[in-house]
Length: 192
Image (cartoon, rainbow, N blue to C red; front, top):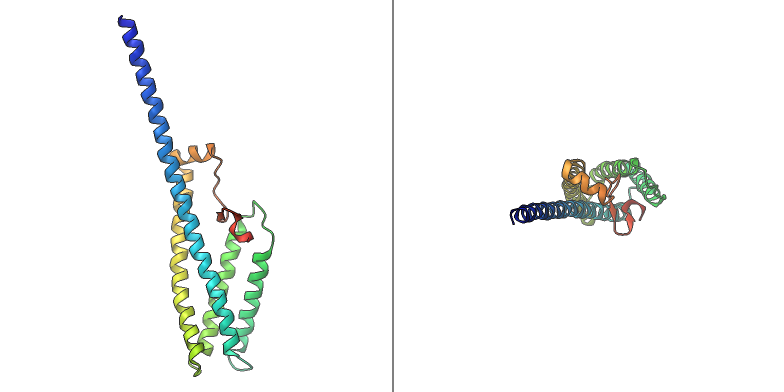
């Protein structure tokens, strides 16, 4: 009778340990999914801001009509930067191209600088639509900077979690790797 009780107690302890491990893995999996969704959401918000800025910049170029004045050179640089960015995003994506994300953000930073320069050259010329577009672009630039900070924080949290002990084990089992650039449901976002 005594041996049976010890055997049952040992089996109960093993079952409790197995249930604990399964529960712990579930908690880590939920946290990993939360981090991944947070990164995707932050990237989507940032990418939408970039697209909206591109649309407003096109409208500003059409309305401002810089001609040969002091805004002609920034307008040319703005067109060249926008064309280069569109060509870059249309290029095929290579799966292990980690520099693509950094290059994309560098293009976006350059476009933001050129837009700011062009806006300051055409603002105050008496055209209310141009002035309003310049104000909208300035407000959008502030939002983009905040969205970029939010994305960097969420990406850092995701990368830190997948590199630390509990997350790294679950990420390896689930074959989740740290992205070189954000990915969505349809594949790499930069390839769209």
